[in-house]
Image (tube, rainbow, N blue to C red; front, top):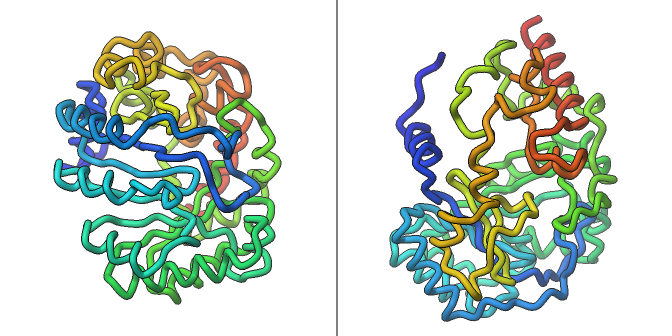
Length: 344
């Protein structure tokens, strides 16, 4: 078994000791775009956490050992106090990431992010304006995103462009990565499209079939791990995933979730502290307790090392965190074939 790096050991220790090392804070569900794959079910949902409660939450997270805070949405820049929240997070010593669609970045926003030493992660759906705007369903969104990236680059802000692979762009992987390179920023692409937070499977219509992604998995841009068959059965005592073990999500309504895509409400910050929810919630304890041995048919599958199985996906497909996932099975078969092609 390959030894863990120091970075990996920190995450492993956090999972073992249930430290919320990584927290995603959705400051708003409002958004100025309507991306076809989005998991936000209601863009009009009110932001119930006021600035004071958000700042107290940051103090709570610091006491519990959080190191990285991700500010997200909706579109986080629609929340007027986002910079105040980010400044408090930096004073508490958090690494700060901002998830944004990039279209609302101005010189002032870029200056603020540079002063905070924060990083920005921006979704990239295509390498040209017409298909990009068609996917976001807002004309001009590509040019505004491109301008936002340029403003960040001028100020030395670290930028990551993230490419969700869909039925619309899976053939254009080389093009989007080349576009990111032309802008001088890093780029990552991934195949996972998740159901909406209310359980709606509508976003899944945007998912590219796994068999069509084989060239991507076998190509230079895939970051999927391709371990030897059987290696998925190692680490039987480790949690199934980071959700509730070292990761949590807080919505703009104050709901605390084990993960941004796992729609199980563990508690609400309008009536409870984060510590109380993190340490005592039955939802958090249930998700945190899951181990490979708890999986149904998956536990003995010879393709387990490849599948990238997600409890949230299994819950959406089969109604059970430990249940089977058709997508995971298709994903595993595609990765196994990609590994065979690479080896050949």
